Length: 492
Image 1 (tube, rainbow, N blue to C red):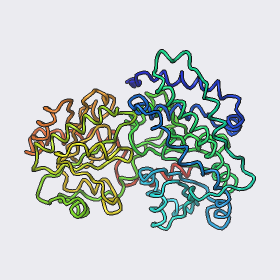
Image 2 (image 1 turned 60 degrees about the horizontal axis):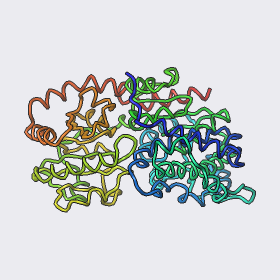
Image 3 (image 1 turned 90 degrees about the horizontal axis):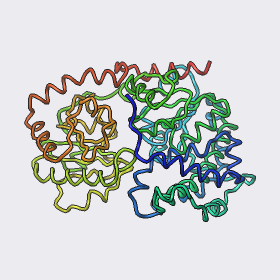
């Protein structure tokens, strides 16, 4: 099976080739080369990841988010030296880099096995949520937000880099893309040149002060993940990435690792389709599934207390990933509109939106007649795991969310919506495991059948077992032990 490429993705490479020529002789870029980081490889994946936003957004400034968040980033180096010297982190053999809770969920189950093997490890993260979770567990973590710049660190002059692009004319592309699209790509390149340089400063301190043997990433194609992977590989440190979501989009061809631990054979096959070497991909299962609770038929107390759900009414969970590399903004808004109509027609059903972190709550607030219930309350009071959200759930509606696989694993009916044929590459859609709909009429009929507990629904759930066995390698409760054994084998 050959993977479908994103339309116009060739333009991304063309833009970067033009920009690369203009920035190649800049001093800061030479520093990146010396550190073994291919700056344009990082930017290529970042532009790809933001492609739908770039194409569908009128404002040229909406993509400009990262640099301004991290302008003070390179001021914060000295703190880590002091912290490392007085903690157990200084001689850690393995460093985990979770950037989100979804990364951490796959890494935490390994901890007890690392302790049993007496392997020293540490976590490093920018995410406040991740750091708070680790702190509550009593695990040591390097808070990358607290680094203080030492007096001898080189500074970054944003204006000097930005000025390079002021008069760039992309002669070969002006007839292919609008100026606003080209400008947004320029913005990403400008911002990330600074951002990546700052991240290299952080990696260099970790390398000198901790000197790990293995780096474990939750994501090796994002800006920080790709930079960390390239930097440490250049230093001879072994880089392992652990799968955490779905890998059905082309951005995964940009992943950088020595080994990639994936859920099952299905994920391995997909990466091979993207051109990845099968020798370096290891299906071992999903650690997060080792300790999942048995599914309950009643809605959990947190949802009743925080969202005012009613126990004896049908409850359908909606899991959309928001606009991004799989779904365009116009498609996302169209799906929401159809769900709003659905909630009005089935007024006796509780339709709950669990927003994705990259989604925008404003998209759900435009229709005052909508009966959708938005879980925008204090996240600390809502269920911590997706499986708690599944308790008492009648069905799950999604697009490309990896939680669709988890719902199927939990023996829940999954309805997938694709109103603009953007999700044809999603495996559980292609293999007809979900109840797939491409218009409102079909959506309405499927929901009606699910609510009535139709025999067709029961048959599909029974037939899904073979699919799940291909998605998750040996869901036997021993995945975290297998992965720990595999990672630790590279310490020898």
